[in-house]
Image 1: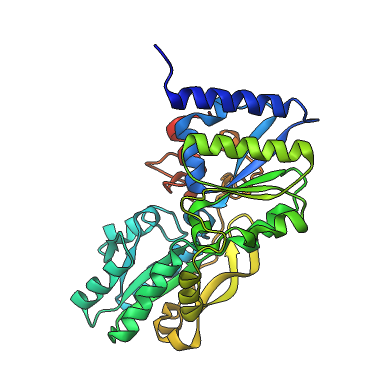
Image 2: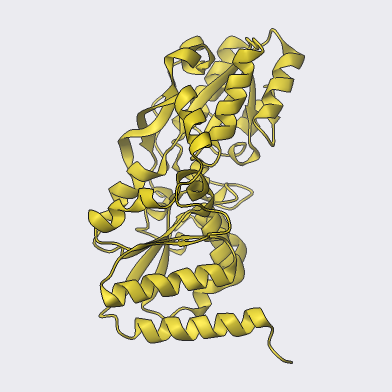
Length: 359
């Protein structure tokens, strides 16, 4: 049977990548920063097309995975202590905290609503008023503009029982924390996030760290081309930032969305699983919108919680380990009974390995 265009193009790119990689002195490791890239790479079998001296490793681009378990405990304590309902995206439901998960809280009678858009929270808040509704704000620059817009609407419409518990993250501080690692040689940069941030904002990878980066979409051929671009730039020692997703990502990004976020939120220190507290890497509320801050309205003190010391999530999302090196993987830790968030999230590396295998 004659190969399809996609198959022929993939074979040609794989051949070109192998030719380029023959000039390496050792293994080169490229990090896909985005969790959606991780899933796309595994589902399309891209790893099986690459030579042994090119390794694709996962980064901290899965928002659920980098959120520390104390966030889940905060949410449950607020719900219990203040008779509040919780609204969340589905990925958070089974993430374990020290006191259980949102799923177990719901099984015990707690009011937990799974939503598909932040705007759904406002309708729920109106239905249950005056009972408070706390939206669990987890995500990167892709989701924060829609959440900022939701908060702004709540203010304009005087919806006074709607609140947000924030665990937002911004990608640049984490990327800067990782870019200095000598065993990382280039970056597949996130497509959706870059639609908001743009392309030139990544120039520090070149100027400060001498590392190349390619903004890329989620089709297999696009990812293979990005790997070829990274390989060629490593061979020529000519690092640049390339926009490989021009159909979606503009050089300047989306200034309107960024301005909306800046109106509602301000930079704040944030704790990342695997990276610790990174200054100014999270988002809290500006003074104008403080009334929507769940932490101010419903103060709680979550218990000290630590990850299971056998769980490798922290090392996996910083590119240091792969799921198949974890003793729990596929045994005690499965999608049905997850030990860590990397097995829970639809963007989690462990979930990708479990569903599609190491290749």
